[in-house]
Length: 97
Length: 252
Image 1 (cartoon, rainbow over the protein chains, first blue to last red):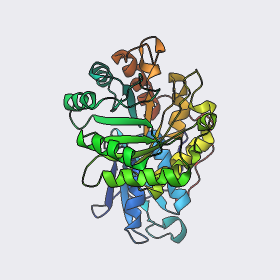
Image 2: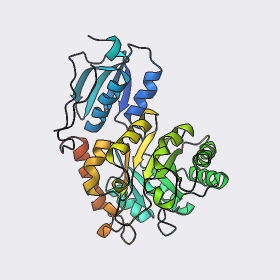
Image 3: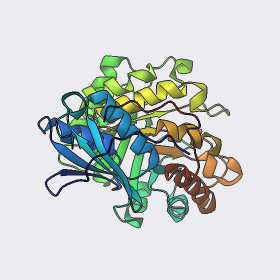
């Protein structure tokens, strides 16, 4: 089995969250989209990322770790993964449930 | 991860799409190993498929002439290619950057994406360092990067650049907002490592040709489907490619 990212208990996305859909057929993947989205958001902002596959889910966890973002919520929904990412949340603890 | 199949004509493109390729990459193996095909061929392939099927155009290892290259790039856009690949070999950093910058300028007002490419085995041809690709792509505002090989003697991408280096380049490219692609005589047996690297696009030809022959063989739809199935099994986790991977470091 692939490594399971360790995720703290948290809450699912809310209607106000910015959504990044990484399940579409775009050449540039979800990390590129998340980078662009995060640049335009303030610390503590929440992004709901839809992730198409296992390697991308692992990539997003690794990316969030490097960038200091928290992932308080991670679940499988149908054929994809749904992650809630809190900008800067890993260092500031903003947005933690 | 999208599957890109290199094709030489419409018949091969139809086979590739039958096998569920996401991208057909039009090239011409008769005119150097990765040469350009003729505009009518590209036009015919583009017209055969909806926009959801990406059609890329390979310009090959381009001459060190920004004007000539940017004109060819403009031609690819006029043919409504999804993307056009500019391979840098016989160029130093500055001239390579200029070629890409002029290529990007040639695409203004079009939806065609610019893909900057280098070759993992370029040292065999006294070419540009392939690991400069991320910097070149970023500084030229290219939409994506590709690392390919020129050597087609049985060696492939992983004979020239290790997994760790490729992963580093792919990760860096993604964080700059670019699409990332790997190709270079890739085989079915490379799918595990490719999945771990996780580029946005993986490109094949020999692996999906009859008799595994990228030159004498033809793209075969069943072979494409086999690679696509194998890739999907790795992407959805039904085949584990990580084994005892180190824990993912993040602070939740």
